Length: 507
Image 1 (cartoon, one colour):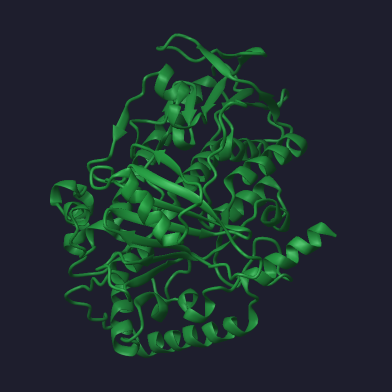
Image 2 (cartoon, rainbow, N blue to C red):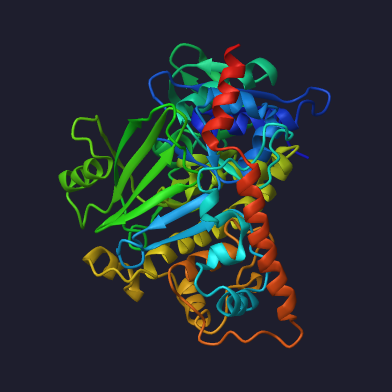
């Protein structure tokens, strides 16, 4: 059977550490006669990077599992609602160049039928607006829910934009107070255990040794346990994803300014700009590839975008890539310690959620089972990282912009083989579930459809199958229009709903 797994030590806080601690402790309140002990060690010397974070709809399930009230979360984290992403300037850079990647699924799972219905019944609309309720122009500043709805329920699918620093503070307070996690604020100075054996303990500066059976590395890009101690290889993906820097800032907003319901991603000559609206500020960042743009050029682009020459900015540097595997012996990396690609499509937090969820649902009872669970984890997440890389690359491959950055992104040598194969078959048919191996993909076939057809691609042939009733599809598209009108009339604006929550909390 091997040694029982009773003590879990999470090294590092941040979003990754505290979400993981919360999910484990909420799901495994009691396990066996001795229970399960969870300790989180967080260095006071390493601040959380807060630039305005985007999430996926999975975050609602995560926060609910942890036991947070939605209204408390929204107020404490300066959060707002996210209903997808808008991409401006990615196709050609023209003024009217814009498309959407919403969170709502289209009216049919069959992409070829969607293409045919779109071209036949609503050719003047964008693909997303024609086949999805969420993309009506009238909905762009509206909340996805009403105050009277239960927590985490909505009329439309949604995630959040949030202040990462405030999120960590909320999670730390909730998890330690309500879920029984032991918190040690200290700096880890040594990892104890031979490099070909399990980690036995970590040594902290003020609290001595902290022993554990399973160690979770949430130490960020330093990857103190998996990367530095065990030397697990980092797989550099900069030959596929070129961006490696970002200049970021925070822009104050007036209390009556509208709050956008989507992450706005605006392309420039060597990358793109994110614009994330929170209740009291916007988080804005200019992402770029240092091979194609100098730092001062990127800063100039950012300041021109926000129209402010005096605001403070910060420079962030990163290498796109991930570890060759993520669970080694009794050490599992979650978050930036496992890897980071780039901010596009908000994959960082969802990878934390997915990693923590798999650990929670398959937490080994003993050391003998750990190697088996690690093998399964590594196989699935090697697959997931590869698919995310392909999906992010898709945005660049489809662009028709002519700057060197964009031309080089279209070079076949920089395109992963599986994406290149899919692009070949997608010239003749739409992306489908059969193009992917997993039942629950991070980005499903519908996401590929929104990007492909938002950026102007169309299959060379898209005849409907004989069994498809076009009249049914027509009625579904008409229902989309009716529901868009109904929601536009019945939903409050983001600003009104969130301001109401703030006033209620202050009373």
